[in-house]
Image (cartoon, rainbow over all chains, first blue to last red; front, top):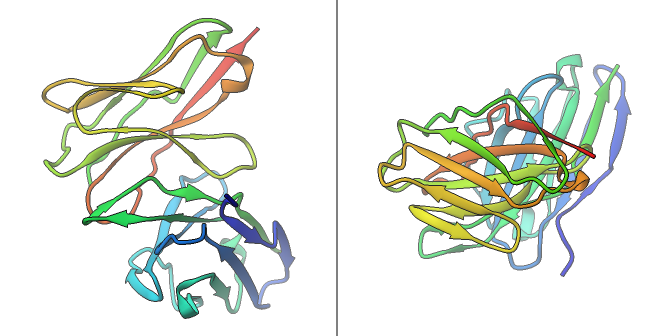
Length: 116
Length: 109
């Protein structure tokens, strides 16, 4: 079974540019999550999709971040325009859900974003 | 979501048993206790999850006392490859995971 994949693995962009990160969850997982770790900080939750719907986007830092999950399969996270403080590692995770209980989340390897 | 407290770092030697204790005094009735492991340049990896008493799998054991205000992750006979950061998380029915600083375990030869 393929795990969670993320693309690209690394991205270096200049301040003000746009970057789109992609996450492919494990097939059949309805739940998809985005997290990020900025330098020296803890891993922070960004948002949670259930299929194509945003269940919880309380962790999105501001309106420069836009997440989508068209068709309930893969997801993209766009940062526009990127700022220096957006640098960090962006993780995607997926899980399945049964009877209201959320099971373990499977994480991807992350995308390291560097904004210069 | 309940906050967790765990040691920042621990050292051990190959072949020893390692126990990492986590405090979660404000755990709610519907919260589960979950432990993740993270190696450098990788995403966190699920190790074990429990609600009460003891849970064991092929990787670790999780001990949870009756009051559930703490939990202990036990790694039997660690090897160098167990050097990683270990996170204790408490999560309910929201799906969102709240990560703390974790415990950096260094296994020495």
